[in-house]
Figure 1 (spheres, rainbow, N blue to C red):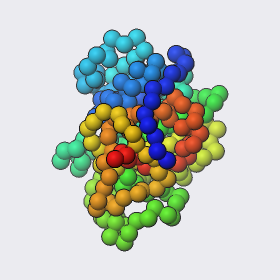
Figure 2: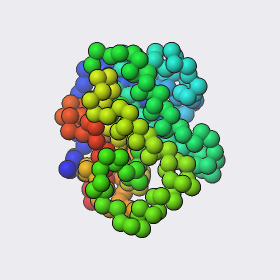
Figure 3: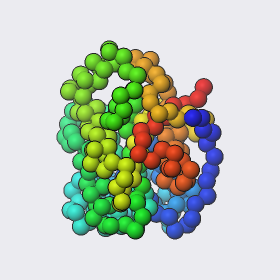
Figure 4: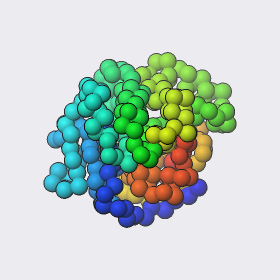
Length: 252
């Protein structure tokens, strides 16, 4: 499926909980949600790392906290009243960020956020939108078109590189523990290829990886942010991809 980015209008009472909003892609998600008129509740470890110009936006509520350190009651308070939860959490690209603790940041945050949503008993299912990676396999699909060398590489990465294992476990949790019929949580796992800088452009969405891990495609972070915002705010995008793991790549 191909997509050309266009702005969307949303109701002013829509609230999205954003975690990971100070990362490279997360900042773009935050700015784009605010541009669309969405109220954002952002849980961040350091408010000083928010993108310039957003701190005074009346639609933004900043909660300065370590997400994994919040107790169950505090976490439930953050998800309560939100129509969508967007997670751009990831491991910092540095030696310490890749190999240092917490090794299970994404998987543990995913499980805790989904648990908090369930505990809050929302009247309608809450959207859980997770940014992941094209290296993550669809837990319930056998047609990912991986070659034998690619499968070997992924096994090695998941054994030796904690973020690769963490991202896969988060997707596995959503598929196995939440499924597609949960009355309180519905999910999408967004799988970009090699992340690049750049403004929003045309991009395409696919059911499964379209390029070899050894010859990857490019995916602009702005395009990932645009698609994740579509999922959070547009019924058409959400209904098409709910319970799936779309791969997003730039169109040349």
